Image (cartoon, rainbow, N blue to C red; front, side, top):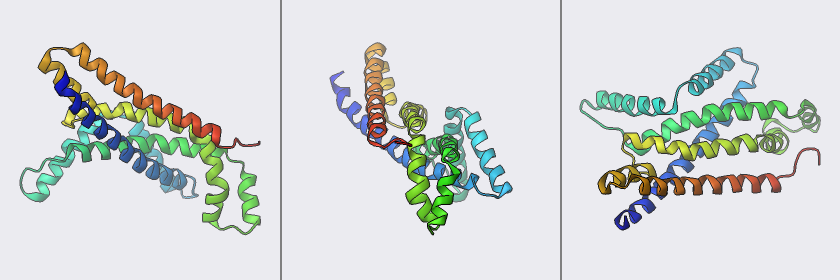
Length: 219
């Protein structure tokens, strides 16, 4: 297994990069959708609701396959020749769609839980919409969303393993190749399990640290 140690290290960086890029994009898009859903525009609300319903109702693996093969088909038609979508790019897009779908509902619930009096008080102080979000609603919403948001990150690190099916050289892919090459599935899959467990543990500890350092509402 010695020859696969370096491959595992490289695969670990790929997995972390995939999760970080996906998490940031999914968070930004999810927050945008959550804010949009809170507007007084019924049509926009229905669009966001339909999006989150479809994303949460379709398996993550199927979304990855649809985006990978759909993107390849679209790119090939545009280029007039066969063009294969990069596995990392397909993974980022697919997992960002999944992450944003769940993050939208997490942020929406947290926004709804912020007392309406806080917004009214901010308006009475003359704060504009951006200032109300930055100084009043946003900080309180984040505190309420942290536990569920942390769970999304833990799920994200585990979901990155699904992208190996389209050829991304991540932890799961290296474990699969090593297990087949050396006929030692238990060794390689245990090694992969240890790496994923390390990532999720670090994420869990980071979220708990953020919850302790973040002042609770009402204190």
